[in-house]
Image 1 (cartoon, rainbow, N blue to C red):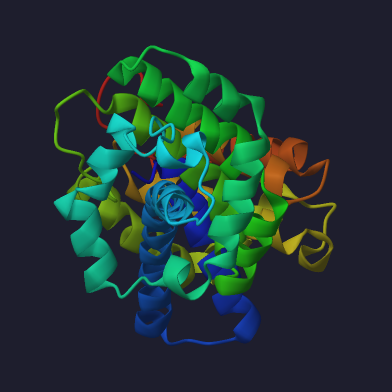
Image 2: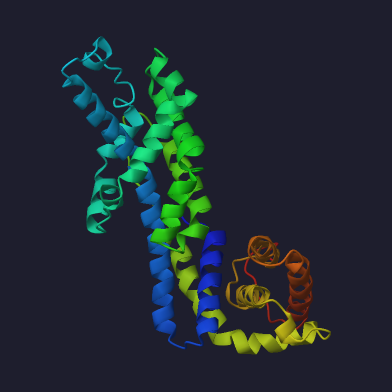
Length: 312
């Protein structure tokens, strides 16, 4: 499921896009934001289905080998450990995976099967695969460990696959690391003989509402927040502050004032960490200093009201 940090990243990107385009259609931009998050879910399911497609390709190659005119003993009695992999079979027979693919018309691997072949060839050449099929043990634990290793060592690092994802959906560039972690966690949680189900997109309704509320309130109040920022940066003109830094500070101010259950320190730390990935090398120090000053001012003027002990 999407976590709060990645939600903040998606909101940051949408606020930036809206301010850059000078578009004031809040409803349209919010819909774009929600669609972007849903598309991230597509990426998650496609990665899981890729494992199934690899198994299907292996099965087809075995079937073709058996039909050879001069079939070898190995062709006639192939090693079927990969196509019998219990975890991949659980994904292949998952109603939730199948339903999601059908409902959203996700035919990526059918239309672009060359990427399945690229991954498959790399898999066949790997020691990981050779050691797996040569092992005599056939436990679910072994199958799961193998599948997780395949994803982490072969699928996730593949540059051609990453390029394909980027070409398919530009927003996936930032989603890939998060989705890869999500896939590994999903695979790791699967238990033997349990029905495989895809994870929920949001943890709960609070997280889903957090997306809309953070986006709307930041956009609607962003000019007002500029006054607070200017007061705490007297030696800086607004056009000298990196645009991403300004947006991250404004989002943090939104959390200070509108989300009583989120501790102020958590908000500051979250935006400092995001700035390290999306802004300049000095941005984290700048953002930390500005937010620290503003939070102290807001507290002194009773603008920040947090619910619960230790939330300030």
